[in-house]
Length: 184
Image 1 (tube, helix red, strand yellow):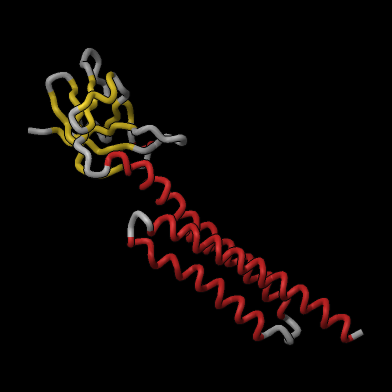
Image 2 (tube, rainbow, N blue to C red):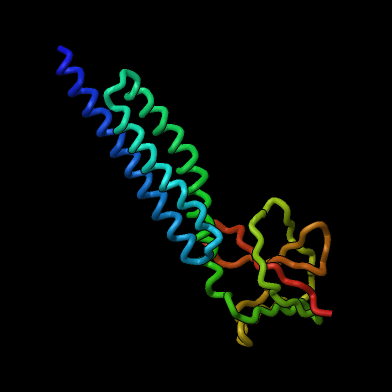
């Protein structure tokens, strides 16, 4: 009976290692997408490395009595940290940066009546902090590289500061804004 238990245990450890390996590959792919846009996300490769380290630990301890339970705990913790924090942060950042590519190195100007606003190169993602700017009666024109792109688009403001306006760029989930500073 001992041999049968050992075989079952070995199979379970292999399955746990495969799950951790898949997690490490997913973590690496998500990080690679973000690193393509910014090298600031390179430390997130440590999550993929952590997955490999966890696999090595499981293999090294496969003869121990508690290895199966340790593997389950490792998978849960790895999914929580590497999945939600590591992959989630990188995937969201990559998606945001992908949608900003159109505006990179572009001149984005917004005319609000007689006032002119220029994109300061920053983006903003916290919709709850913004409210619709009350600009009744003023025509709003957005130019990208000198060509009129949009007219009478909704514009947002934060803390009633009309020196900085927020222009929402097209994106599936919404909530992606270019920060527009008033030119003086």
